Length: 447
Image (cartoon, rainbow, N blue to C red; front, side, top):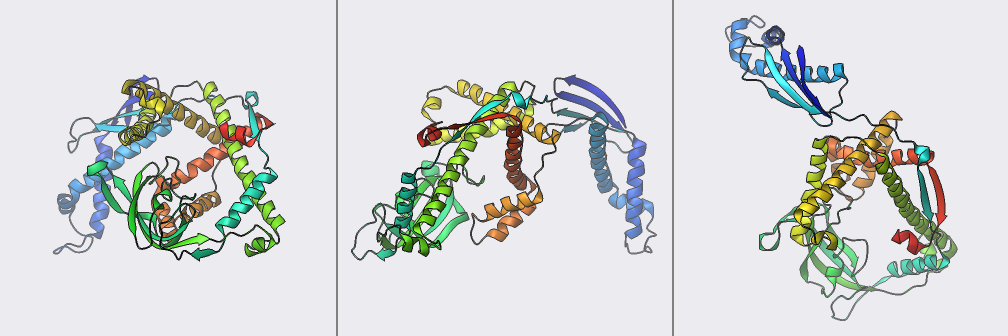
């Protein structure tokens, strides 16, 4: 194999590769000979089919396979011998048409990953906010839990559902493509169907707009409610997409008020009301600590971004920008752009979001290199737990979810990536100077 470097500008590399005809012919003839030993053709004894017959029948197909294999092998050897780490899949282009008996010539173009200097983590200083849960918050949560778990009583009068009522419903969710008169409602999506589901009108825990859409519904009535999944929704297949739920109200109920006392706590399997408040305090504190984690992580990444000064592959930036811009276009068509973006022209928006894409790629490469350099890995147990959590979001379809991840490496990588990032963040926080700061709940939420 003869390799000639054609160009090396920044992170871009271009090579000319020539594989001798003798190597191609030797590999092809060996493959044809092995094929001939297994052929069963009328008129010839097993294993005695003449090579001329084998070549006539299978020569073209085998040659194609050999050429593809030679390109893959040559590309892999080139990367290994020169120590190149491509940012994206190298682009391979044949030079002219291949002729039998001739050398195989092709060009390889790629962008390589940059050299990434390691930052001085000890020079990074961040504040970690800490908010404590008050007794009033705990009692409010206990009272709210008692209300939500109060015994449901049938509404005997004929009236529409009002906020706080519970509507026992069947529903089917479908994604929506397009808008207005051109909108097309698709097939039901996994996890979007339920029967005899009690839903609190105006309650939390569902997609924004879902429970609100039940206000005024009556038992026996069917209505369609349009909603949009948030961009941060846990399922990448649904995040940011509009959907339509067809909901049939089967019964209307209301909750009988009940105090959050020892009897109520025991109905939940706890020893006393005090134990209930302890559990609630821990739960609320966990939420506050999670929010604090997001704040300190953002501060850490902001400082890393300020310290990161290296070129990034244009192809990776373009791919990231393409995904971001697609969502921006969808939001624009749906009228969901925030006030700041709505007042900007397309050229300005493109420039700003391209900078965001470049920042994401640069930070992603830096985090990846920090993890690689320090041997930070995601174990199989961690991946399995992540799959279990995802499967838990689709009751009754857990097996299909596991099979989906087993058959789709990219989907599994989408689970691995955030776990890896969190482990890298933990590693950096251990080395950085982190100062705890007590704040109010309002300050934590506004940060």
